Length: 318
Image (cartoon, rainbow, N blue to C red; front, side, top):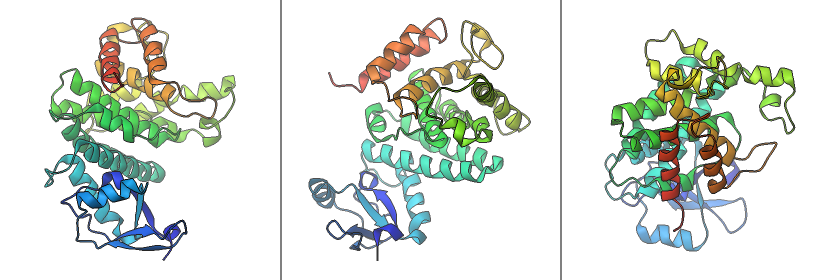
């Protein structure tokens, strides 16, 4: 059996006391061959995880038919179900894995109902984690991917939005809705050709005009649904609006921008500048904080900027 025929899973998502319901395989040396490491119904032990870490092993493998069992395991782990022994780091890694996997699949299928349903489910899972009293933002920051795929950006924005909403004092139900709105905020980009989204150079006038249509396109796609709130729709429609009226698609000013739209704007900019893009390298977290602070009161809501920066600084070395 070869690793290239299997699904790689992150060791960081494996928790002692909970079996994933699928056989685990590990590489044989540096080859592509694998051997059975752990049976489907046998959980990892702490000493097993320590040995893997000491050997520098970050990935194990499962057969493709075990994917649904692994996804169910990730959902339960992230939501805190039936595993009090799991650490916040393991829960955060599980949350990131399941959000990326589900969102990538629903975006690829370009199915509106599937995407909205997935966003609702994932919002609940994420809210249950970020609203925990012992949640540590740094654990989630450490496991996020930072490529320029639309689904990765949407996943990160959603998780950032959930953290910010929780820190601002929103209820767990509100956090759930905010996370789901964040997952949907760039839905309009699915209509934009990849060669524009991944263009390594500067966009020309026509290309940028097409990019600026995505909030409106996403809003039109979702506006008639009765399973989304007004605040979620405004995250889709207003996340590029700016307090001074210099945003798009309308140029809405100040308090006329919905609070959830203002919240989404802060974390959307932060995620964009700290992630890899075809046309530039990522900013450091401190430089990104300085950037959004310079925009505070002009483009971005000052209270939300300061709250987000406090979250970032809490995750940085003292």
